[in-house]
Structures are given as C-alpha cells and as structure tokens.
Image (tube, rainbow, N blue to C red; front, side):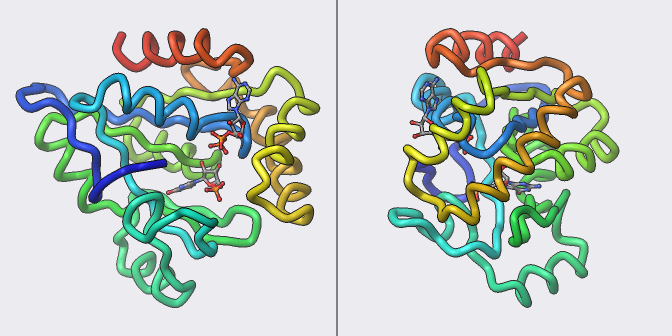
Length: 197
Ligand code: ADP
Ligand code: 5GP
C-alpha cells in the first residue's frame, strides 16, 4: 500500500477521535479494501503504520507499509511500553506504535488499525469503545487461491497463514460486524457504512 509518512492525515476539524480495528485472515483483501477506502477519503482516514520484524516484500518501504525493525529493536520498544498492542504472527512480531495513536485520537482523528486477532483482542481491552470489523473470505479455498495468486509468501508462510485463518474465522463473532469480501465493490460499500455510521 502507498502510505506516506506515519499517517495519511484525516480532515481537520473532526471533533471526536475514533479507533477502528480491521481484522481478517491474511490474503482476505484487507489491504486492497483499505487502500481503496484511502483513495476515496484521502482527507478523512488516518491509517496507523505498524512495526514488524518480518522482512520487507518487494516494493515495501520502511516507514510506508511498515516500520521494519530487528527483533532486538522491537523487543526493546515493546519492553519500554511503546506499543498499543503487539503479537507474534507466523514467526514474526507485529505491533502498533502507541505514541502517534494517542496523539491522533486526542486531535479528534479517526484512526484505522489493520491488525490480527490477538492484537484486536488487546485493543478491545484497552479501547473498549473501538469499533471492530472482521473481514471474512467467501471460503477457505478462495482464501488460499488469493494467497497463492498474490505470490508474496513462501509455501511455508502460506500454510502458517491458512492455519491462523481458521482460528481467526472461528473468532469472527467477537467482532461488531463481519463483512465477506467476495465482490470487492460490495465489500467496500459495507466497510464504508460500517466505518462512518
Ligand atoms: P490482505 O491485506 O488481507 O493480506 P490483500 O489485500 O493483499 O490481502 O489481498 C490478497 C489478494 O487478493 C490480492 O492479490 C488482491 O488483489 C486479491 N483480492 C482482494 N480482494 C479481492 C476480491 N474481492 N476478489 C478477488 N480478489 C481479491
Ligand atoms: P503481513 O505480513 O501479511 O503484512 O501481515 C500479517 C498479519 O499481521 C495480518 O493479519 C495483519 O493484519 C497483521 N498485522 C499487521 N500489523 C499489525 C500490528 O501492528 N499488530 C498486530 N497485532 N497485527 C498486525
């Protein structure tokens, strides 16, 4: 995704800060949906840039898709309490840096977190008012073919991601709303309504 700086900024003058969590299995289309939403609302949506210990994929840049930190660097910041939430996923650490989120909420921005299940559960504890949206695939077969067609992950990673997917889909009822990403345009409309209602 093409994010510039720490956040894509939201419109000025919004009075009430809001945190929205988007969760769903790897390959379900979260990034595709959120990128389209950002294109539609470049001045309204603020997208948090996470940190991760995984290696950048081709085309990904430090500070744009993620902050790519070493495990030692990540663990130090985690131990210093710098993350709003963090989790280990498919052999790597991922986390939401806390500082910029706090600032953005205080400024009345709508902040979007795209994170996996364990992180979403932590946010439910620390920000009970956050809206939590689950993106589900039409089927596991479709999910697998999206992961394979994306050609960004090794077979080993795909197996890990599909394993997580089953756990995540089983937890969908914990979320405020589930959107099935079958037809992209319909899913986008549903996501839009869920975000702005
Ligand atoms: P995620 O961010 O959830 O890991 P991506 O946004 O990278 O998933 O999408 C995974 C793959 O599925 C991409 O190749 C994307 O183009 C494709 N994709 C996303 N949404 C749809 C859809 N509704 N129908 C068909 N393919 C889709
Ligand atoms: P990927 O390696 O495909 O970019 O991401 C793998 C998983 O990590 C996805 O489910 C994504 O939502 C999740 N993820 C990305 N950033 C964060 C984060 O900051 N915290 C948590 N808990 N999960 C994240």
